[in-house]
Amino acid sequence: MDKLVIEGGKKLKGEIRVSGSKNSTLPILAATLLTDEKCVIRNVPKLRDTLTMIKLLRSLGKSVDYNNNIAVISGPANSSTAEYKLVSTMRGSFCVMGPLLGKFKTAKVSLPGGCVIGIRPVDLHIKGFKALGAKIEVAAGYVIATARQLKGNLIYLGGIFGPSVLATGNVMMAAVLAHGETIIESAACEPEVEELTEFLIKMGAHIEGKGTSRLVIRGVKRLHGAEYDIGPDRIEAGTFVLMAAATGSTLTLKNVKYAQLLVLMDRLEHAGVKFKKGKDSLTIIGPKKLKPVSVTTYPYPGFPTDLQAQFMALMAITQGVSVITDKVFPDRFIHIAELNRMGANIRRDSGVAIVEGVKYLYGAPVMASDLRASAALVLAGLAAKGKTEIHRIYHLERGYENIDEKLKKVGAVIYREKE
Image: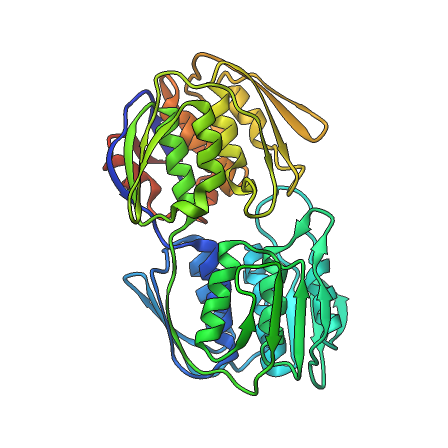
């Protein structure tokens, strides 16, 4: 197993191309289960999570050829059981349940695993499947769904912390082959759901309301193969934006959609960060001194929970006091302890983190607890004085394609060592 070593205090300069969106790729790959025909998915990032999804598709009988960020999926699935061994390693793999149930009218999927960032139940998924007429049983660590015929229905998918991206996609994939009309109210509006909707429409699905909180799905008898180019990863883009701000660097990002970063850029403008927009590029001009800014995470188009840890790391070196609240995953604060090991002054008070910015962070050995916390520690290491060692970087590899190589090319001193 590798660890990541960063020698901090270096300016970043140059261009980074943002990879395809992980959170769009996973449900789109799962959606190929809805057809026996060939699907070609381009700009698929090479990540632990995407490779796990490809293994899962193969275990279900699909033929998958993956090279040069292109996945070609063909042939029929011959199983409707998604085994614990794969699903337990990645929460996103639970999204195979909707297409399996839609295609086979039966599905047996292990309860999911993934990052330890708080309780993330699958109750909204089950609620949606039941509304479509499926009988659900939870036994021996598996969710088992069966239905003679899925039937369209009016479904409310709002949860106590807002809409669920994964549940919206999962229920939508089950509904596209259901009989009649399904209306999903309080659907997640994230760009990743919009991309899945676009792909399903290319496959022949009838869906209205793309990108809104109300999706109208009229079931069809069958779907056909399709081709699709995955859009840029807004969380990866946001992470690099925050790294440039933290190091006071001028950095250009290619393959970005500015509209998807609107709330982040608004907060950073208040902090004193300058930037220039291009057609599909964004240049960040990090200031010498930042001003503290408080944020609260909400479902899209609010501030993303997946950038909360990275933003906290930035505020940790911004003198003054900022308050960070996570309304999506209120327990997502495991990274506080590791940032404090590097000299940050952060305390948690119930559901909020109070950050008293310090002048410098100092390199230290730290442990990654989850995917986005890993990125926050990389950011902290880039800005810190001295050497930072990040352990358990397999979390980082779940969602950032070659992040160390991308950072090396723009001037970071970052390398891998064996544990």
